[in-house]
Length: 393
Image (tube, rainbow, N blue to C red; front, side, top):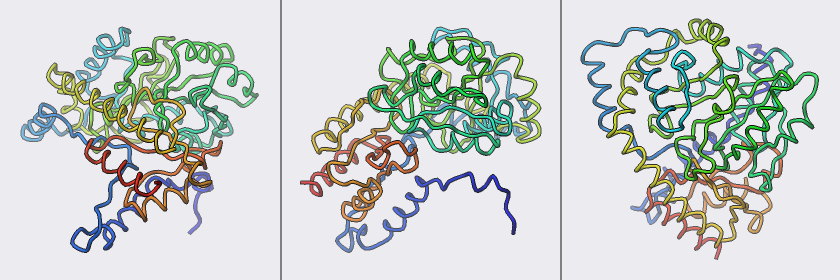
């Protein structure tokens, strides 16, 4: 069967391929305690170990029980858009009118809608290298080109305004950033974000910012939304990470007023609407008890970071920039192995510990790095460190 050419532009998602390999090994005697093995520990997937809190689960049950499962408007429930608007005012002190908020089928749906609305065939979008692989693939799926710009620890593995200006070309449409970032857990400083927005705006481009980990910022210095830099900024967010609703597949976009009709038209045709049950359940995310629980969980992720990062540094798995958000450590394994792919495979085979090699996240020195997720319980993190100590000496 002849495939569309665009499929060749999409690389395999190695994180998920690695997960399959780890799951297969987990079924072997090496991971069977009854046969003298050790259970596999998974630090490879970026999924919170917490589930939706009680009020959210109860809201979903009520929705189903009451039969409120019909389609919603393509832009989403008005009540939920209003709640998100109020959250921006409460949490970040910025005015984001509900009319500019579009509910989507996860952050993935949000990114697809944004790219289809803004990226033409051959358009270039500047992105940092390393960055989350699916972001560049959404650009490719819209028949644009992701231009990966090497970023280093010196710039917190983020782009700078100077880099944006230096790499801007005739086909450049804009930039796609993530703050906090996957895989590094690092954020752009608000002043640098402003400089980038101004540089892009001056060239008639668009700034897209993935903010799905913004609720999990640990440092007030960095915990700012790019929306504070102007109504022309487009942001992507999600209920998956901070709100612990990964499988519920619900996210949102914040777009300029002028872009809402185009996004609505695309959403009507591609998705009809996000999950109705998920939307009704998400209303309960913003109840005081739920928000208090989310903040407690954020503090728990910070405590896990404060345990894991120093432990990795002591093992020679140096984390060059302390993550200020999300739940990832981007560690340099070159002291132990020249290839993070081979190192991660060795760790999986000999320590029954699944981590993620840097290959997925770009090409700028990523063979030196591994990503470890601290979205797992503290006791599992402690056991993971113990196994690494045994392996590395």
